[in-house]
Length: 296
Image 1 (spheres, rainbow, N blue to C red):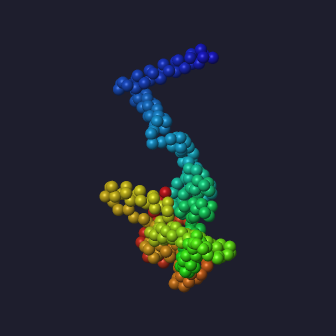
Image 2: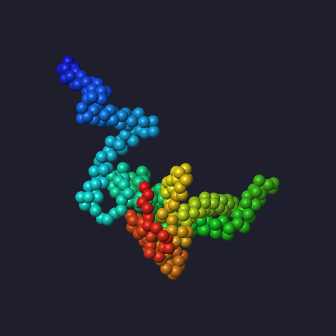
Image 3: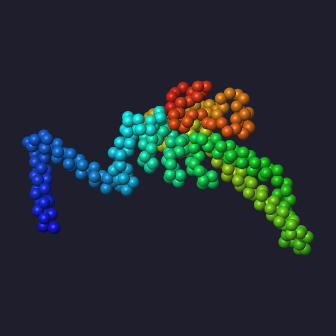
C-alpha cells in the first residue's frame, strides 16, 4: 500500500513543485501565476488558524463554520425562511439564530436573551427586556425594607447587645433560655438586615446609574471599550439608546402619561415594557433626537 501511495503522490508533488518554480518567474502565464498566488494565500490562511497566538480552538471552529453562518443569514434574509420583520444585527454563533440589537447569548441558560443585562444566580434566571423592571423593583423595595427593619430595630439591637455583654459577669445575670435566644436573634436580625441593605443597596444604585444612562451591565463594558477606542482617534462616543435621564426612566418604567407614575410605579402593575425587544425605536413622546443604531 505504501508503494502504491508513493507512486500516486510522487507525480503530484513533482507537478506542484514545478508550478511553484514557474510561479517564481515573471514570464509564466497570468493564469498559472494566479493559481500559485491563491495556493500560497490559502496556506497562509490555514497556518494563521493554527499558529495565531491570539486565537484558539474556538477561533478555528468559528472560522470553519463561518460559511454556514453566512448561508443561514442569507437564507433567512432573502428566502423568507422565518421572516417576521426582525431587525437583526448578526447570527448568534452559539445557537445559529438571528441576533437582534442589544441581544446577547447566555452560556448558562444556553439561549439568546433580548436586551440581556446579566444572569442572576440568586434568581437562577437571566435579567433582560421583559423582567428588567421587575428585577430593579425587587432590589429597590427589598433595600427599603431592610433599611426600615435596621432602623426600626436599632433600640432593640442595642438592648439585646448590652444584655449579651453581661452574660459572663460575676454573678451571671438571671436570663432564661428563651430570653437568651431572643437577644441573639435580635442581634442576628439587625446585622443581617444591615448587611443586605448595604450590599443590595449598592447593587440598586449601580443599576439606577445604568438605567439613567440607557445602558445595561453588558453594554456598559462594550461602550467603555468603544469610548476608549474612539477617544484614541479623537472622536466622541455617543450612546444612541440614551434619551436623557428622565426619558430613560420613563421608557424603563413604562410611564406614558403623568398618572402612570402612580398606577405603574408606586402601585403593582403587570404592564409590558416598551417595544418587543427586537427593534429599538424610541416612543413618540420621547424628546430624543435620533434613531437607534444597532450595536452588537
